[in-house]
Image 1 (cartoon, helix red, strand yellow):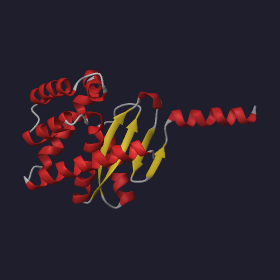
Image 2: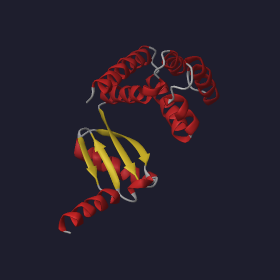
Image 3: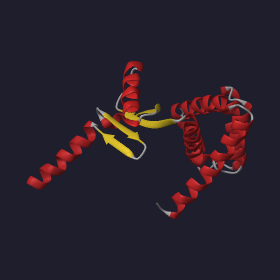
Image 4: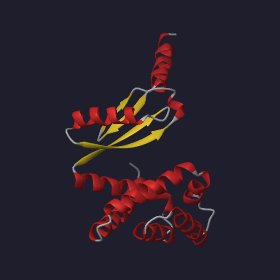
Length: 186
C-alpha cells in the first residue's frame, strides 16, 4: 500500500469512527445506515454526482452547495446530512465511500456480522441473494450483510469477497486464464 493510500484510509477511518460514535451516542445507527445506503444508491445512479465528488475542478463552496442540494432533495437525516456537509467543507468527498465502508464495518462488528462484497455480471434476484447469504453464513459462522455491485464486464459468474477471502468465478477471469494458457502453449 502506498503512502497516499495509507493516508486516505487513515483519514477515512477517523471520519468513519467519528460518524459511528455520534450515531451511536444519539441512537441513530440504523437511521445513518439507511441514509448511507440511500446516498450510495444515488451516487451509483448519477455520473454527475460521482464527478462532483471526485473532481478537483469544483471549488469547495461549489461542492458544498451541490451536495447540500442533493442530500436535501434525497431527505437524508440530519446527522448524516451534517456529516456529509462537513466532509464537503473539508474537501474530502473523494474518499467518502471509504468513510461509509468503515462505518459499515464498525456497525457489522457491533452486530456480530460479517460483510461480503458480491460483484455479479447482472443484478441478482432476491432469492439468489438469500441463497448466497445463507451459504456465506454457513462458511463464516456469522450473520452476513451483503454489498451488491453489478459489473457487466464480468460477462457471467460472481466475484465474492468475504473477509480476506476472495472467490472469483467470473467468466472474464476464466477467459483471461485461457488466453494466458493458450499463449504459453503456442
